[in-house]
Figure 1 (cartoon, helix red, strand yellow):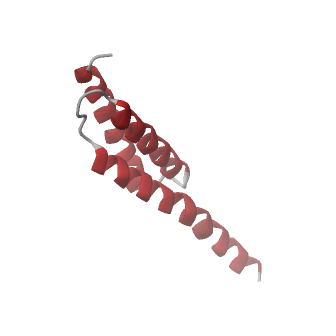
Figure 2 (cartoon, rainbow, N blue to C red):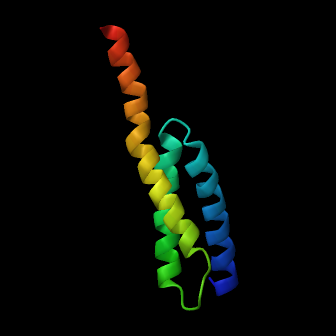
Length: 84
């Protein structure tokens, strides 16, 4: 895969991950955003030439991790308070 094809692949991956990192989709979207951000960051690091997207990959990793950790708490706490 040449550098242009890799850049296009990373850009598409990060675009999808960015949308998922913002919407969250009940924790699953955040987990997918985290995973795609991590894969994109690894692809950027392994590239022969400079591939753009490192900052967006870190955004997806960070927001995906936060969403993955907070969404289950937002779902479980109301259920527990309703049981009281």
